[in-house]
Image (cartoon, rainbow, N blue to C red; front, side):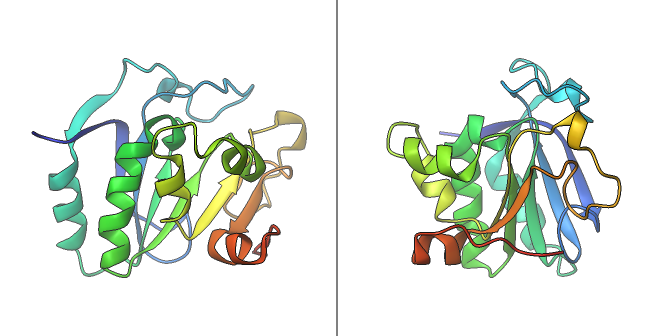
Length: 169
């Protein structure tokens, strides 16, 4: 059976959604509705288009310039099973994986066993940029995030040490 994912779009070669040349997959569907969201068209769970996951993976692996993958949104955690499937394939090929979400790292850890795909996704990404966008904490000078409440978390180190390890940029 064909595996599909609902995306609002793809940035094929991006330098602004994590370090190095990256492919960015924008999830379709978000429950957070953050005021001032830069991507409100991604909120509708019926919007965007269904894309074949195997073809998306193959296309990434065919591009030797890519150093990493970024899952953005919408919120990738609303399609965690599909994004986890992609993340596993990219990890096998030594690509660095960043994921943005309106959920906090603590919330994800608390609910990872009851939400489909959450356990697999959190263990197959390298960096999580977490937290809702807060228009009152918006800062144009921040790198890789829109508001100062959002954190750039080293997932592997955080899971190993059982404490949140923040990355500075």
